[in-house]
Image 1 (tube, rainbow over the protein chains, first blue to last red):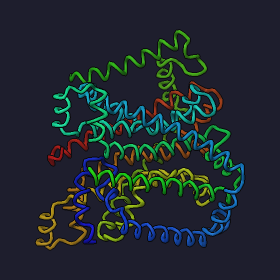
Image 2 (tube, rainbow over the protein chains, first blue to last red; image 1 turned 45 degrees about the horizontal axis):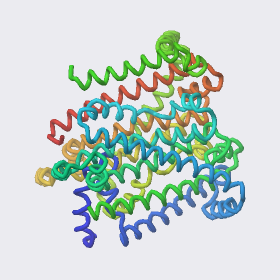
Image 3 (cartoon, rainbow over the protein chains, first blue to last red; image 1 turned 30 degrees about the vertical axis):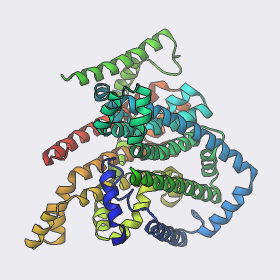
Image 4 (cartoon, helix red, strand yellow; image 1 turned 90 degrees about the vertical axis):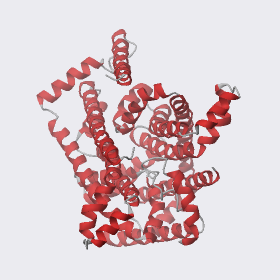
Length: 276
Length: 250
């Protein structure tokens, strides 16, 4: 433990400013080799838990890790699966792009402009707290079935956390930096590109990391409710047909995809904090 | 009234007015959405007639149960996890990636495990909320001043008494932040689960109404959920702010 103390001290001071859901330690203790060791412990613990649960529950509801792995390997070789995966990847990519662009635009506008932020920020927080799933019928009526509704659903999940993190990040940029920019007579575009963005990058990235997760969940939920393609649709279909092999394999795949990409983003995020 | 509040109300009123006009002119067709004043009238009628009271009570009741379980187990497990550094280090990985995992993917398994009653829905709501509570409680426990704990030791307090009298009150503002998130998450969990598969509740009624183009039920229900979640959230935020201010944390 003692080996990582200095780093802890450095990182924790910065992460504290981020936000309530991300603790000091959530972002902090994940680094090689401790991170790797913890990761391995975790994976082994989860596999053991899964196997024991399987022994208790049995074939009716679960498959063992080995069986699931086997079925997943088989699933991945089918062409049909790749069609659905591509569809989901496209929808998610588009939704994430929109969420990041719109989120940053809102974040910079409100972060640089206190008066507007005072009016709009509480509204953003309020919208963040509503169960967006209830808005789904409205989105479907507005966008129709298919790609655009999925993308819209993913985007509305991801955009607000990105905006809220960016507002905070921009606000926390040292006044001296901004003043220097004014002295140098930078225009607003240069100001953002050369001063605010680099200074606020770690926190903004933390927002994007959370937005990434939520956008993924939003896109998948969109596919589950009203879509004829994509992993979410495949999962919903498997639920309807009570196809446990497929449910297990898809759940496993989604957890792996989400877990790995999220860990990777977390790692990058820490490197950013370390540098700043 | 503060000018920010004034502007905020102005924006909401303007937005509703815009919707009203768009519906009136016909830019938004009646089948897609009814004008806001109709939605409000329908909501009042719906509540007065009591036709959907059972569904509303079911959803809000389940959400409340999920919320309470999430807060109680979350705070309790955070206190335990806080004692064991090694466990905590390992679990930090889980906490950091937890919300990237689509919990709803587990719903079919839960239905098979618990049956098609309220249990799997409550479980989903709890699962979504509990990690936010744990993470924020741990965050709060980290900030309990050492002096207080030493004082407790000098006063020969038992572990339970220390937790009850010192640790928890100190961490309260942070726990409240977690609780605020848990409210939203348990509602999302319950309603989402009802959407996917269930036989009752507001989520079920909304998707049923949607499938039958029954806007007179769908929109009022959506409005009701929005009002409930925003109100609860605002109340908790106010309480949180008060606690934070009293501690001089903000």
